[in-house]
Amino acid sequence: MQLLTHHIPAAYDEWKREFDAETETRMNAGLTLLQLWQDVDDSGVTALYKVNDRKKAEDWLKRERQTSGPLESRFLRTA
Image (cartoon, rainbow, N blue to C red; front, side, top):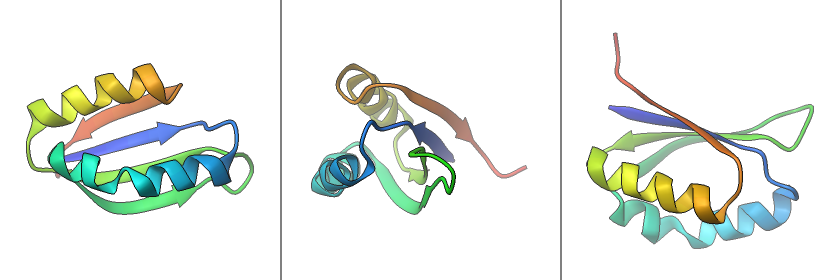
């Protein structure tokens, strides 16, 4: 299972520093970052994760939404 997220940070550089500092937190939430994309035309960022534990990932998403601002997410599986 994968998780696709889309963030719209106010300032990309600041967001990226915080994102990098939270690597261990995401790993503890059962997430492995597979790919990170930055939108070409705005400050949006899309991330693709491998989900090792959906419950932990859902708990992480709740915390992220409370502390990191707007965040869209979708759990996916290969069809």
